[in-house]
Amino acid sequence: MRNRLRELRGELGWSQQALAGRLDVSRQTVNALETGRYDPSLPLAFKLGRLFKLKIEQIFDDDAKP
Amino acid sequence: MTDRLNKADAGHRAPSGIDFLLLLVWIVSLIVAAQLFVRSQGLIWPIIAAAVGVLSLAAWLWRLERARRASVNLVDRAFGSFTLRNTLLVLGYVLSLVLAMSWLDSVTPPFWRIGLLALPSLFLAGWVWAFSAMIQSSDEMMRDLRIRAVALSAGTVLLLATIWGLFAQLLDAPDLPAYLLLPGFALGYGVALQIIGGADA
Image 1 (cartoon, helix red, strand yellow):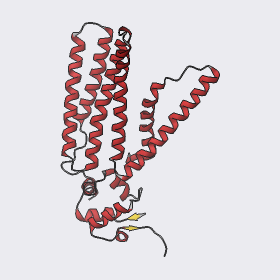
Image 2 (spheres, helix red, strand yellow; image 1 turned 120 degrees about the vertical axis):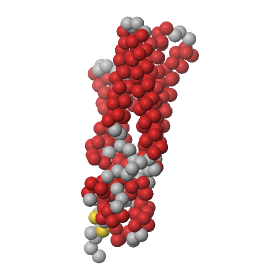
Image 3 (tube, helix red, strand yellow; image 1 turned 60 degrees about the horizontal axis):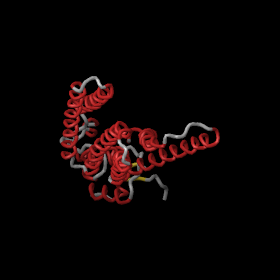
Image 4 (cartoon, one colour; image 1 turned 180 degrees about the vertical axis):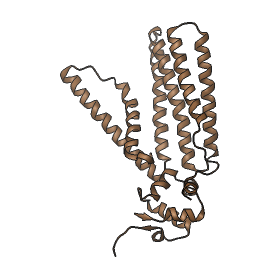
């Protein structure tokens, strides 16, 4: 699943470790999320949405056709 | 920009050269102390080597605990706790095993003989508890990786042990040293984690 995490993190000037600290996950998890190797659970996706003040679908794109 | 985005924050400290040096010194000096003690060539040099080992171990643990406390990330702190517990429990296991192996023949009351062997067993049980606690305190991705590594390693060890058992039972191969199962599982877990997780592990 594609996402804008790296871009959003960059806009706030946070490192991966800083974002990991705000989400209470490891830096490896942030890295895996950004590179699309791991899709987050719903609770983590909502946490990301709240952190960046965006809807989940504004952060993640599942490439699904309507 | 890329460097800045990947950079760790102030307060988050990756293991440094000093940490690796201390790790190397305490492991090597404790092995040397044990070897000198077993060869019984006087007590002075084993004591000196053991003192170097204990001091460098204490410094290593102190730096580890300081880094753990400095981290604001709950997951990092939990893993730091596991590293501390893991080191102390494995050390306790090795030391109590050496004691048991050295004294078992000279101790005759059954109660003391059982007690001598129960001590390393307790350290092993403690390690299993610390390992489980570490997995439970991991975040969702790392927990997923670690549980898959546990399944792969446990499955492989059970399969190999069962095959060995068949050979021992039917072809008179030597019996499986069953005390190697848990260390074998731990080794297999480390390998499996690297295979499954790669850079994320």
